[in-house]
Length: 110
Image (tube, rainbow, N blue to C red; front, side, top):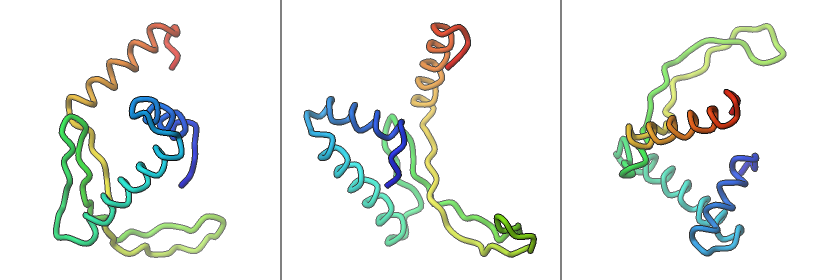
């Protein structure tokens, strides 16, 4: 799993809230993501709703054409299914509210 700054901060917060080590928090996060992936790909379920957070949704991507990076040839990418996450209205409002507070506190800069 790619470890970017946001992911590392998330793991530290999760570990602190749950009284886990960072390694345990990372393992639980990996297991959670794998369970979501397996559930949506192995069963005829189109979404998983997590109350007060949002939904993981199976999204159908249409066939499309494009160019490969570094090459000039046009290729066709086949249709496929992908998993999208959509925040609940409540979670989205809280995130937007926190962003506004940070911008106000930092003079318009996140």
